[in-house]
Image (cartoon, rainbow, N blue to C red):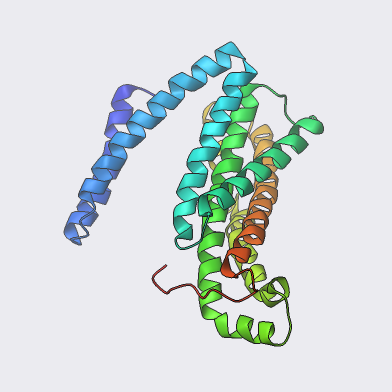
Length: 253
């Protein structure tokens, strides 16, 4: 793709700016910041990836994965306002999700352990785990707010916090998993995912691109389920005191 073609693509962002201006949404500044950050971040990422791929050093690959997980956890933790230790909770969920998924991919020889394969696939695992973790945390807070009476009733009848929170836990994990499941149902019909589209544009055989995309979809489904579960199993405990009393979250949290 030429620089001229890339410059012309700014016209699409211009359409978004026009909509914002016409509807008085006040998003023009945010769009401008987003454009600059996209250009800078992706350009830096491109040069860093080129260096890591050329060097083939595992330590650089590890540092990059650690940075990706840290940034993802920090972003997802913002959805957990009012939850003590939200950053730690999300970070543990993302790290476990990434470690288990990547370990299975390498253990079964599905992908080689080179940066060219590990980093892009890890980016998909971490990115989707980040989204699932954020959705899960947000749902956990709202469920405890809405079901506080139900949880307190269960506690008064002798249930422990784990038992009393069962419906909350199920709803929260489900919320984290549903977007990926819905995406799997429509893939190939409503949308052609990014990895598959990129391979086809690069001249790869469509059937081979489809196989990689199937791998990615299956991989993401497992990763988001793990992340959602780990986050909820840690998060629900923060809503109870050591005496097993429910801490009802504020509606403003």
